[in-house]
Amino acid sequence: RKWGQVGSFTFHTVSTGVFLIKFDSGHARDWVLDNGPWDIWGYHIALRKWTKGMSLKLEDCNSIPIWVKLSNVPVHLWSKLGLSYIASVLGRPLYMDAPTTNRHSLTFARVCVDMLASSSFPNSISLDLDDG
Image (cartoon, rainbow, N blue to C red; front, side):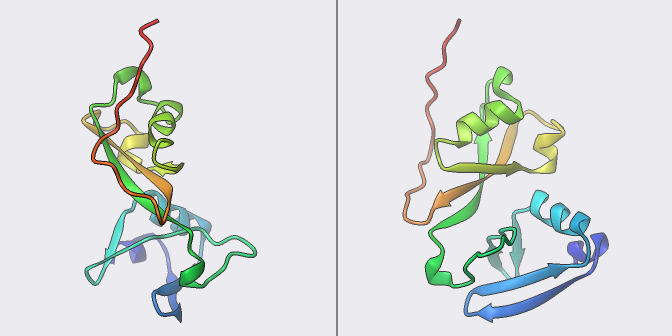
């Protein structure tokens, strides 16, 4: 429902568990990617921007974009570079949600990270920070 307020899109089944969502505008696509995570019919969906040559087979999916919530982030690391540094412990940082980007609240940050599908998810991340 929220997606339709931003722009039109069509939803196509490619195979079991794999779908292609075509947006009428790049603005709508970017809004959906930036404002996740999303659940459809009770299922969490992992969205990835299509690239030329991308496999659309579920078994070829070696990594998955995961939204992570980072709490107790030191203020001096509350930037794209700092949050990417922290999130890189888990995988390749992709983007932050809108409230994090706009620094609406410094209580926690949400970052989408491309993680290896075979990796385990830690409960916490310890940072060794230089004081100088």
